[in-house]
Amino acid sequence: MAVLLGGQTGVVYFGTRTNPKAVRWWADRGQLHWEDSRDNGYGVVSVKEFLHRLQAVNDMLSNGKSKENEGMMHADERERHMRFIEEGLELVKKAKEQGMPQDARVRQHKIQNKPISVVMPSALSVGKSAAF
Image 1 (cartoon, one colour):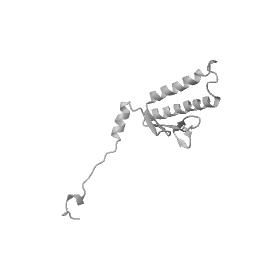
Image 2 (cartoon, one colour):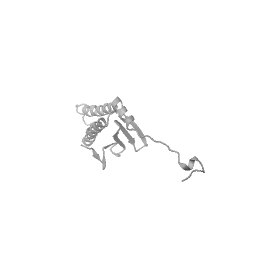
Image 3 (cartoon, rainbow, N blue to C red):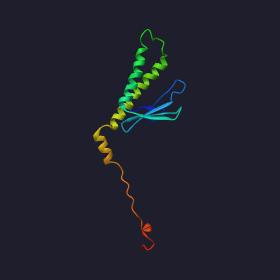
Image 4 (spheres, rainbow, N blue to C red):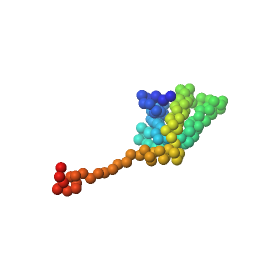
């Protein structure tokens, strides 16, 4: 299942209530990339790091279920956070399908499929006496 949000496949947005598309997340080469439109920030996190972040958001939400924390967050905010967790898990699946950069087989495959550039001298650079 592809995550469709904002007309882009495989991109998840998350931000404040006033700017819900502030941070854009996507999977590329087995890692998760983010871009913050508020300050043009950019970063890359591993799948493990991203899962830790999702777990922290989930823990924050589950804390709101207790009587002491009731009313900590509006229902629409809880729903928005839960949707981010679900879509984030889809991004993790996509990143894992692409192959983890720490895997030796993935690194070897990337080396073998790396394009090679070869520069060939032309007849014009050899000298003026070249015959055509």
